Length: 328
Image 1 (tube, helix red, strand yellow):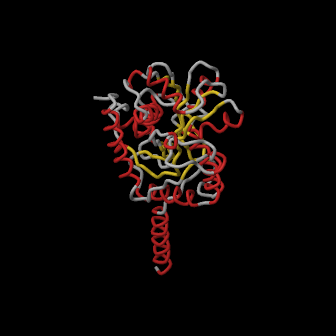
Image 2: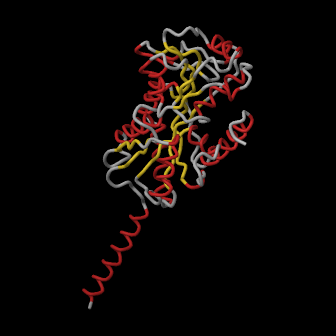
Image 3: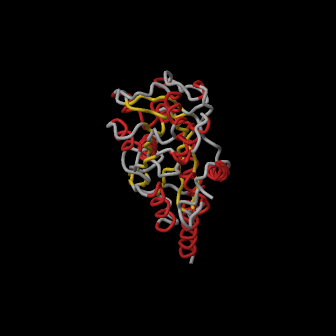
């Protein structure tokens, strides 16, 4: 009898212990990071660089696999996350201001920001306007002067869809420079920034609009020349020689945050694990080195603030898009 009672007690204790351990989420096996672009763009950079640091900090049990899912300016990946990955706590999706821009303009039909979990940001990437090394435009004012005479005279290429964040950065700068008829400025959309820069370097398009992190390889090769970075102050390190638009008399700033969302319907403890993991990654020396090497500036709203930041940015971009005639 005593033996029977003991066995029952041990079994009950084991059940309680198992239930208790089940409440503390930890990722199991391979983690996926969906980059809503082809290889070479900003979202691809976010997935691959964050994945490497998560592995080095032992915040994941195995590898982080980057899954490239280009299309519709991030819409294909967003729809996939909403419709196919609900409750999946092993997947992160790279996001940025480009994501909130598309949401602000209702470009993901039938979907909104409340359909995913916003996890956190790992820095801000600042926008640039660049030309090929042999371009006739020597500075941002030269470029804007041509557009003031004829807004159709300069063709831009970017890695976001028409009306997306890369496109908006051109319009923000042009508006600040006094260019009129902003909707007439030609903008060509490509799947990623790498493809857009290739078109500029090849002489098929006049100027590139994108983010500083995308340009590093082309800067090092000498094929690309940045006319302006859309930041309040000059960036540090190897980018310190690049002038800002503001110092050229054009009051245009275009930061692009980098971060992640996850599917809906994941457990609270799973969401908290990934929020904490992003916090730990952001504070690490390894990630600070990635930021220094790729022109990322500090940007990391605290855990309880990121969701509200995203919602506010969507409201602001919606208002801007209406002001310049991109949406009704």
